[in-house]
Length: 80
Image (cartoon, rainbow, N blue to C red):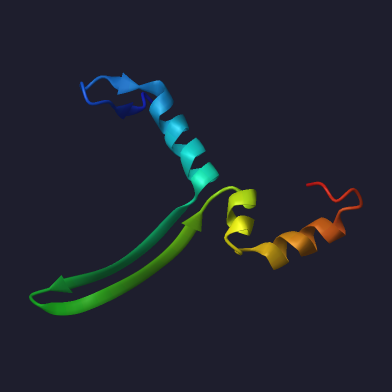
């Protein structure tokens, strides 16, 4: 993979890594509604709600805390 194009049109190898690092650090929320229609008749619909982030980021927003605590209780050292 050559990376995402920069403003000048040349690929940047670190762009994808930087984007992933930022998404894991800050968090990324995806909220999308998609309806597929043909001749004005809706055929299928998709509702997507997703949160992407590092575990610390998601816990700071109150997401997945119960799941993470339960997983850590199963490990003797408390570390994953």
